[in-house]
Length: 366
Ligand code: NAD
Ligand code: ZN
Image (tube, rainbow, N blue to C red; front, side, top):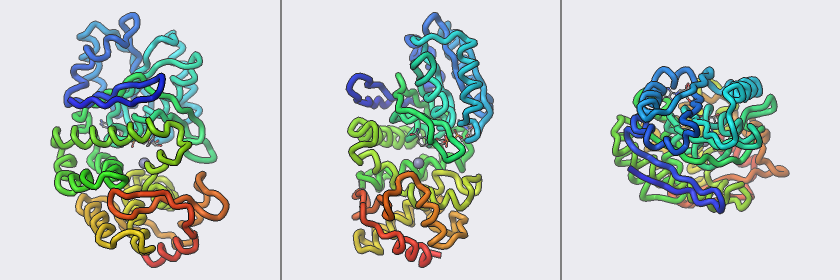
């Protein structure tokens, strides 16, 4: 078992990572079940695969389970489903001292976290993430959100969970493509500031992807440690440190926009190609050794993740992709703050990237 603590002034919380944790959740979650009851919010895919495990262990511990089951997919992060969820929680007479359990991927975690932050001016909630992306990224850090017509994640709050309970074995039922996409965010932590962890990914990442429990637990533990440290440093993205978590995301976001945020390119797949582009662009600027950029590209390719425009199924030219970046909320007056690298494990935020030059680089990549 691994235990990571997110240290935030008044609201520190634990992240527990343990193979089989779902089957022992009755004991772990008993202290959180006020009046012997827990509301569990999940989606239909997770209800079919992982909810029975949680349900069985909670009931064995004498906890009554009230499930709320929502449709799967990004569309569920909407006003409509938020309203439905809040009404369902109120119908169950949720009180401020109650803990709502979010069992699922980032969609469920983001939606339930936001609902918890506004229901009765703030209820407690517990994250039980079931995708690799949610386990290493979205369940930690306290960003909650729904999507708006104007863009993704534009309505939300910073709201920390009371506990994050991670069972790597929930990934057994996750489609391999989703696991691989989440793995891109794992690699990201190595690339940001931990070259030894990137080297571990190169040598052992394939074990994680093949379902090895120890490799999963190690990688999830290392990732949440990295994220917890950054979040403790910069909870509300004010000092710039938290921005490092966006490595590969400016390029990646443009690739996702070009593919219409569709199943053609999952978020993590866009991030994978985006990180490869960020390293190659850094090499082109003479900031980063070409050999490091080549290593990044080679590893992503070896595990079957997109690593260039062709493998990301992107057709737009450089100007078109830069146009997508300009719609990014992080744009400031003609330049984009851009995460570049001086090498593997040496990422930094550059404020003087010239967009025309980025477009020329992307054209050369086509
Ligand atoms: P997701 O929640 O849509 O899950 C992906 C798919 O896998 C869904 O179809 C889901 O039903 C299914 N699924 C989940 N767990 C399963 C399991 N164990 N077995 C079988 N099927 C399972 O997507 P995601 O990739 O987990 O999360 C993406 C969301 O996370 C986006 O909305 C993104 O904005 C958000 N996000 C938030 C943060 C944050 O800091 N809050 C960070 C990164 C991403
Ligand atoms: Zn991401």
